[in-house]
Image 1 (cartoon, rainbow over the protein chains, first blue to last red):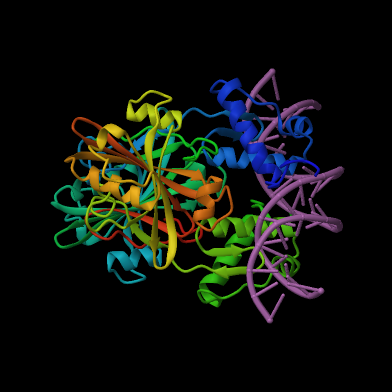
Image 2: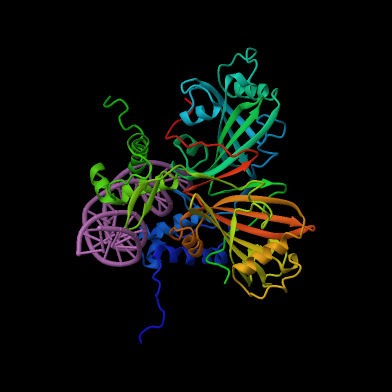
Length: 253
Length: 253
DNA sequence: GAGTGGTCTAGACCACGCG
DNA sequence: GCGTGGTCTAGACCACTCA
């Protein structure tokens, strides 16, 4: 006897909370609206604040919420689609490039980068920092590694570093003919410097897009671009990409 | 006066822990090795278990660790590259397809899917479940939505559902000529059913790849594929993709 | 049944944004 | 200075795996 199937599968509280909050967001809140603070919400649902925060973290990961210290928790707008396919993420420095050069230094790259560039582990390479803005918000920070062999002549540039030199490097890069490129996308967490540029805390989830540019039969440049995972949807291919958002617990049944 | 710059920037303990552990993983541990349990580790570093767990979560997100309840925490192998570019993630059912058909039912899709398919919100569509295995491990679960208009004739199939019917649907789909496709990648969290298929807990981070297949001037099929974010690196483009792993706190300096 | 990671609690203090 | 989210603690119990 007893209850039929009440709590037959005791799912975690935070997961149930996530579902409840998702439905509330869908029906009762508008984009940009401020939610009650965490202490109030926790009390309202009768859970500890840590448990509530676990649910909010999920929702932030899914791009449904935005939390800012000292401000509050707001309903996030739908993710913006950023093109990383053929056209927009093309040969760095090409016309129509969506990136903005920030800085350029000559530095020894991480070992993993050196391996791909087939350069000595301690050989310095030109390291260009660029940033990408979409809809007024910073969406990505990039480090572009360019072996000195890829740029013919930088003697006309007097600046040893800075945005001017970065643009000069990109200009020189354009003299090479791009043969092909390939990319990989994986999940990562923002390093301190990237986090700052993306207006997030260190460790924030990011989508790391690594692109290798091939010219003259070798790797002419390597781009490691860090996109905010909470606000971005990376689009590939012919058209603009698909607008789909995950539904809560909706399976084929 | 006082101390020069000791703790001038008090970074969070869990972040510092993450860095320390990353370096330890790089130098002192082999892939597959089992770490001390969380209680021991926390005691060794003089922090609460919750703080230690926060660091481990980061490392798991970055694909460095693998944690399994009842077993322990092990050092994860490098992420496997899975191709989602042109060839392998091509027209479903084409020869060389890496997917395995699991099931097929006729069901009403989520509203967001119906919108893309340009079908009525309550119109059922063929929903094919497929799974993808790489290196012996399940890496992705897919729901493929196929409007009935896309498949000419299923009358020869007596099974109302199941893997046999799924394969029949894919076979019929091949009769259409694929015009183009576009994809989008975004971060999500695994629904209960996907989590089970991917051998993870609900809410685990996943990379959601949404692909729209265009044929006959309309959307002939829509694929929503859920990849394990901890173990997968999605590769696009001409070659096999780049093998880069994020280095801890290594900036151009 | 012993040992593991997963969940949850009820507190405390800190860093930040804003008025 | 106040309210927010972010960090941290020291416990407890649960779910799972495996010998």
